[in-house]
Image 1 (cartoon, helix red, strand yellow):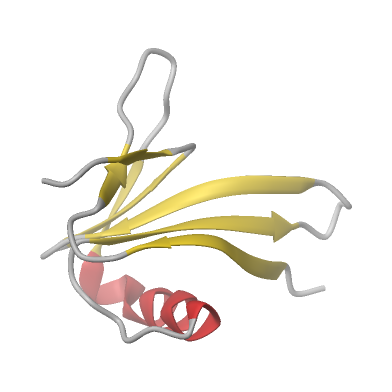
Image 2 (cartoon, helix red, strand yellow):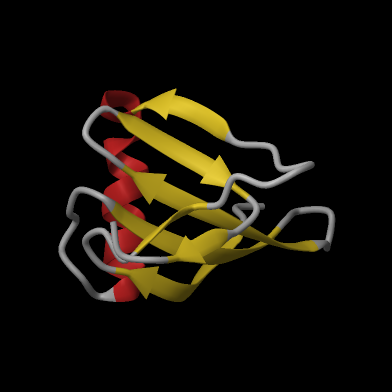
Length: 89
């Protein structure tokens, strides 16, 4: 089963960032291998892929559990975390 993705919120250019807080886990991946993910999330949010943007995404897994994850795209890195800090930077 392919997980169902639903974009809960889109944060345009520099209006949000992955929150770093006690107990948080942030995964960092090279942006080049994650461009398809960026395009997919942008398409679901009906926006154009852009730099320094974030997506809060609900994911239904094959095991029937629902998770909310945060994705942030920068110049050379995609970050995946648990939440997005709303802030201009």
